[in-house]
Amino acid sequence: MSMIKGHLAPLAGLCLSAACLFSSFTASAEQTALRVSAIPDEAPTELLRKFEPLGAYLEQQLGMPVEFQPVSDYAGVVEALGSKRLDLAWLGGFTFVQARLRTGDAIPVVQREQDAVFTSTFITADPAINSHADLQGKSFAFGSVSSTSGHLMPRFFMQQEGLDVDQYLGRIGYSGAHDATVAWVESGRVDAGVLNASVWDKLVAEGKVDTDKVRVYQTSPTYFDYNWTVRGDLDPELVERIKQAFLALDPENPEHKVILDLQRASRFIETQPENYQGIEAAARAAGLLQ
Image 1 (cartoon, one colour):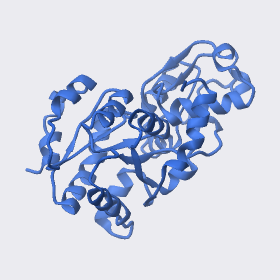
Image 2 (tube, rainbow, N blue to C red; image 1 turned 180 degrees about the horizontal axis):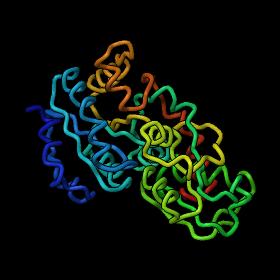
Image 3 (cartoon, helix red, strand yellow; image 1 turned 60 degrees about the vertical axis):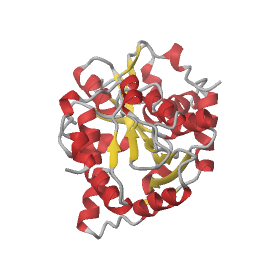
């Protein structure tokens, strides 16, 4: 059994807290396995389903076991990179900025093509809401506090439109994940919410949201978002092999297309820290970074 399947099989018993993540890692002077995680912007079962074929592909390309470690919060991934207990992580733009500030040398390796022009989708089931101006006193759901597309950039763009978000809106909630935000809006728990445009499109395509009830009322401007990041002191030769493995994924190859489709990617392209300077500036403007 590969290391991937070994970690995925006992799903019910997975330890999802940051503290458990830390205790599961063992330090080693020699790189014997690639330790991977991802921000929990969707349900743990969905993250694992998306990662399994990618992990198997990386095992094959790198010639080493790949160990996926789920966590329950965004901060756990940042802290694990900073503590050198992770080698590779799937981060949102804001989480990358936090990781870069925490570690001083985290390196974004690749991003999906669409991550250079990412957007957030504002949704509602309230027929009276047709723009942000209609949100006065309404309840609203962001995703995780540390989410780029589910909190930081939507908040920033709302502020750019002149809204004092914390004063203008009524009750503000944080669902913790994009799919949870949709569930909150659809159930009437909140009047409106915002999420990753890619997740919205996926949920609509899979029939997991009632579009007769929930609708998009606005879309944000574009910004840089997700990337795969490595810790800064990872062996440069291994970093290059990781990068080349992602860049080699070809949508014309049926096996590769399965991986790309699960990652909601047309293909992967190189990225660099400078791409996320706008995210850092937005975070500081929104008061989310000191």
